[in-house]
Length: 264
Length: 224
Image 1 (cartoon, each protein chain N blue to C red):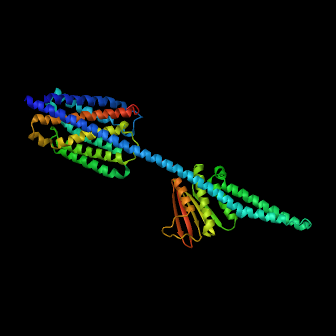
Image 2: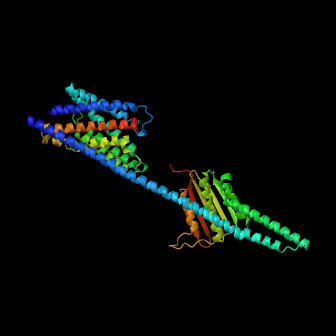
């Protein structure tokens, strides 16, 4: 009887001790593995943040570079030409023939005025002030009016849904995407009609830019052009998506979807 | 000797259940605790309500043990439902709510079936096995989810982790003994069988201790 009791006590102690040891080991193992996973996760998150910051920086540099390029091209192709013409008029000015000189002077003044206006337009187009002061849609309307003014294109801007104000940084990136798209159309598409459609949904902004130009050949293995890659990267910066549909001879449409609110 | 150990462990269980109940009262109307912990004090309250008659009939009114057994067996439905729903609330995700609900209902129906078809005045090992198996299953799903979700929790201060670990330890230790309880009862010496049952009671003590830890984590998230 005594032996049986002792045996029971031993069984009890041994099993309870084993269970406690198992429990402690289990809890330690779970907590340790979880912390390892947590550390890896936070490290990864930190790396992603650095990569994102680098991408932002790179994008900003590209935007800056592109802005300089646009200014340079505009000055060379447009304002430079006008000023050269004005200089030519002034150089060939014959003071003895007063009536002809007056005409030449008037022409020169109007050419210089045009150059000044163009310079002012470029300045406004390149500056982010228009977006910061008047908002994204006003900036877009100005951009569209500039293209329409050239009489080379018919640009239609349509805004549907209830416009939502994004933060100015986001609006600026979005504005640069549209500028890039319009610039690409002007440079490569040989289009006549350009459609810009902005649709504000409950939580999504859909931007559609289409043209009736020559389209882009979709050859496999072809890397996207720098302009397209830029637009894609900028859309990703806004947590958005970028898609492009193109039919040879019929035109190209790009569709960008941007969440209006940041993810929780 | 076996009787003494059994009595000591059982009394410890009653004491820890009482302590757990007292500490759980601090969760009542406490707005700073996590959402899933709201109402958890009911488990400790009911556990105490079940433990008191068991304690009294074990120590003072032995002829009435049958009634406390009935209460104990019926409380299994509450024990299983309450803890399962708690775990489901912690691990719930839209895509798996259907499967979890199905599992919950399946084990609940099985438990009710076993309870209805057996004598409630006896220790129902099969009913305990069913509820333990169900709860262990939910605990495993919890651990699976824990390692497959974004690891943002501090487990050492996470009440749900301590509660579910307590449940998992207690239930998984119970399964082999309750599942083979009826068989072991006739095959091994009574003293050894009683010792095994005492070990199960000891597991409940540990589970309640884990609940106390969880309550402390919920009440003082920084100190815990």
